[in-house]
Figure 1: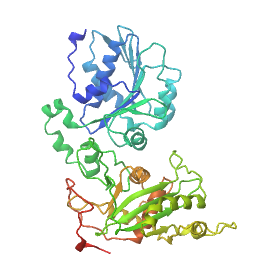
Figure 2: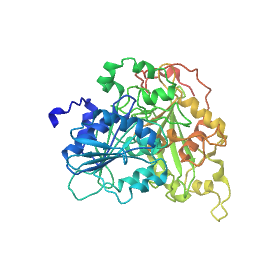
Figure 3: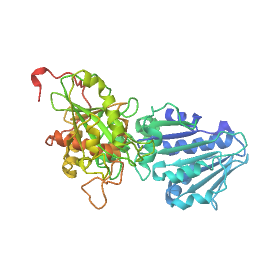
Figure 4: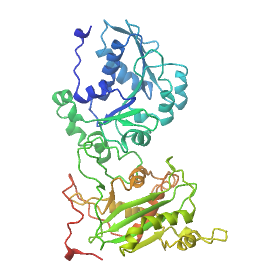
Length: 463
C-alpha cells in the first residue's frame, strides 16, 4: 500500500506530520500548504493505526465541502478507503475512520458529546471560538494506546484570533515545544508561501497577487503576522520575534542600560478587582520613549485584578525604584485624576494614601481621543523603520500582550472599547499626554535599519 502513495510534502508539512506534541498549530501566511498537510497527516495516521478515529473540522459545512472534502476525494487512495457521504466519513479497510464535521454555532459541539477520538483536527482554527476548542479537547481520549493529539492549521485573523495567539504564539519560540502549566506539550510551526516549493513552482505569480492586498491583509496573508486582526485599533504595532516573521520592523527591543541623564516617568492606573497598571518610561535626547519596566496587577487571568490596596501598590513601587532613588535619578509620576477623588474612608484619596508611602503623582490628562492619537503618533515608523516608542522585551509583557489586542468601540467608533483589558493602555496615554508629539510624515519603511538607542550624540539633546 505504501508504495502506491505518491504524496509530496514540504519541510514544514513534515514537521507538522511528525510532531508528537499534544497540541500543534501549523499556521501563518497563505499558501503554506496547511490544509493539505492536515489531510496527508490524517491519512498516514489512519493507515498506521488500525481502528483509529479522527475528527477533522471546519467552521461551516460549505467551507468543509469546498476545501477538505473536495481535496480528500482527490488524494485519498480508493484501494485503502471509501468516502461515505451520508455521514461525511472516510472508512478504511483496517477499521480506521476519519470523520469530517463542522461547528457553525456554539452548540454544535454537542454533536460530539460522548464521542472518542484519537486526534481532533481544526482547519482554520481562528474561525472557531475558544469555548468550541476547549470543549472538543475533552473528546480526545481512549484506551487503545494510540497517540492522542489536537492538530490545527490556520491563518491569522478571524473571530478566534486573540485566543489562538495567546495560546500558541505569545511567549513561544516558533518551532520549539513548550510545556504548559498542566504538563502538556504545545508547538507552533510557522508556515510561509515561500516554504511551499510546489506552489511557488506552479504559480510563481501568487506572491505578486498577495502583495496587492490592502496592508493589513497583506501583512497577515503574505508575512503571516499575528499582530493584526479585524477591528484592531493600533494597526501600526509590530512585534517580530527572531525566526518567525520575515520583516524586521518591531516595537519590541532587547533591554539596555538606560543613561542616567535621560528623563524618566512613572504612569499609573488604579484597579482592585480589575488589574492596576504601573509603567516606567525613559525619554532619550530625541524625545523617543522607552517602556523599560512595568508592574501589572493581573491575577494571571485576563482582566482579573490581584486586589492590592493602594498602600501595597505604593510600597512595591517604592521598592522597585530603590536603585534609581539611590542614584539620584528623578522619576516624575503621572496618574488618572480619579485617584484624587475621596474614597469615603478615613485614609483619604488613593493619591493621599500613596503619598504617605513616598510615592507621588501629578494629575494626568485623560482626554481619551487625544491620548489615543498620541499612541498612534508614537507607534508610527519613519522612513528608516524607527518609531517614537519602544517596549523592552521580557520586562513589559503585559503591555506587549494587551496593547495590540485593543479593538474599537461599537458605539464610539473613534475610541477604544473600554470593556477590554485597557489598563496599561490608559496609563500609557497619561504619560504620552505629558510628552505630546505631532503626527509624523508617513513614509514607507520596508525594513528596520540597524538602530541603536544610544547612538545619538550629545549635541542633539532635546530637553
